[in-house]
Image (cartoon, rainbow, N blue to C red; front, top):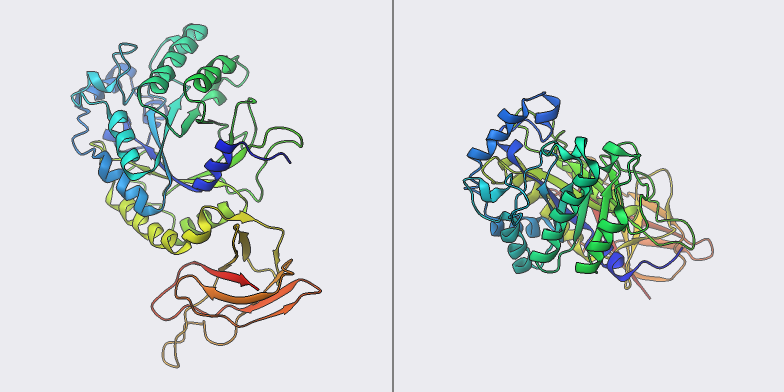
Length: 414
């Protein structure tokens, strides 16, 4: 396998990102596809522009919360399939935020806030568009419109982390003129990551040589396709929602457990993928209370896991006895990532974590000096068979009052 380009290697070191869906649809709080799925009259639906005030959109507050969550980058919907732009299109369209009561370039505010917090801004751009008739009636003209809208983003906001395209799956056999679009991005933003979401049916496929990242929407695969031998190395990215929708949906109470979110983040790093955790802002631009809670809980875990979360990479070490445990490697250490531990109680409150809990790993042949938990620095007892490259460690249960879902131990080699 070829070495990743510097921009792709840097992207993989980002590890965790926040995905934000926000648009006119957010005012209805019934999901981002409501115009299409609920068969709403386009003219009536697009009147939502008249009430789009963005009065609670505080880019600094949102970016600060993303950083506290542990995110290193943020992907924000600059335009979703409804066709409404959150930025000043410089006369390209009157269906943009400058023609709404907000009258603020919200993408400019977003980028400035990201720079203050040292997070990378990424621009989501829907390529499938319900607003302009050009998409169905004059596709070549639509592609010119699309490229001009991306060019505005390329030229007016300084260096950005990347572009996250979504919608080519709607016309999978069409010529999307990708060399022209991607070539324009490379001209203005040579270090930008290019992602083109392959949708639900073509996860992990590379649609163009300029693609830097393959996507796995709503799926946690067992491995990532990094490209064919002797071809360009591509990164992988998983994206997940907190409930069943990307945009805010007030009546969707089917939330994942915080433990599932944390395990999915850990699994992404186990297979060498980045992960986007999605939230949908309210119609006025605030983070919903439920999303705030999830972001806070995930931030507690990422702060503990930080020594390995971002620059940790998979290694050919396997866990024994059918456990879900795995190992990640950084330039300095290996880390044991251990799941399904229980809390230590006593005779009156027995929680299951008492006694010896051996976990074994095959493939570690270097003499070990010390193993300790990241969360409390407790030193663990272990045995090694260097000839068979087998490590067995006593993965002590959680101290009463804690449960990190995925607990991490650092190995210090001799």
